[in-house]
Length: 77
Image (cartoon, rainbow, N blue to C red; front, side, top):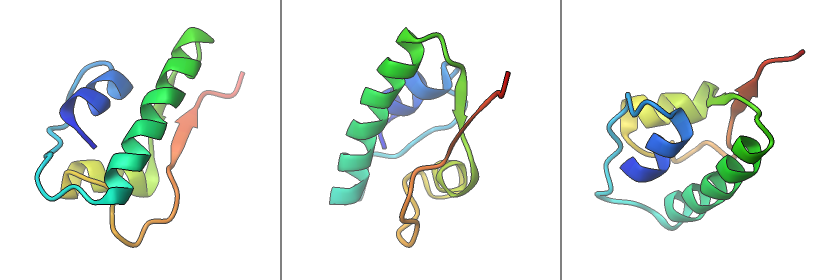
């Protein structure tokens, strides 16, 4: 996950994501998140990283190795 990817996802760039030691999964999942970010933003849906995805971004600066999904949350209206 890159700084640019997370900045566009969080919209306020509060987490510093390292580009060092990115795995193939990190690159693929970051690309998926960028596409999803565009879709959700175009639809006007507010969302945020959550659970293991958020933990990995904050604690590891990347996706957690053993995490096998991307966690996002949104408001239910």
